[in-house]
Image 1 (cartoon, rainbow, N blue to C red):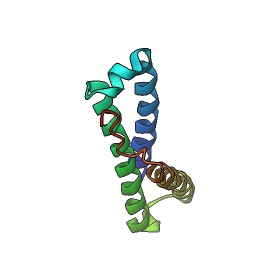
Image 2 (image 1 turned 90 degrees about the horizontal axis):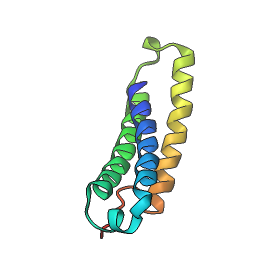
Image 3 (image 1 turned 120 degrees about the vertical axis):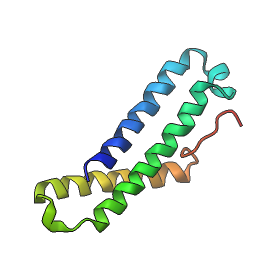
Image 4 (image 1 turned 45 degrees about the vertical axis):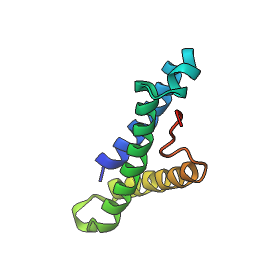
Length: 100
């Protein structure tokens, strides 16, 4: 219940780091199929899959095995992640292929 939201948040941070480090030569690095553009594509997919996996875990997990504060914190983070995935998927950022 803690791992999937953490993985989603870390992949979102990785997206920003990859984009910032690739920005010195943005057109060449992201305009072609390179390690930079492929990792950007993979990180967006990991973000979406981790957020959806955390949703499945939160829905299926029984309440008696988790402390109340941990459950509420996870549900709040989950709500933010699902909103972010829906927003980014609507605008085509999830699975973006910048080389295409």
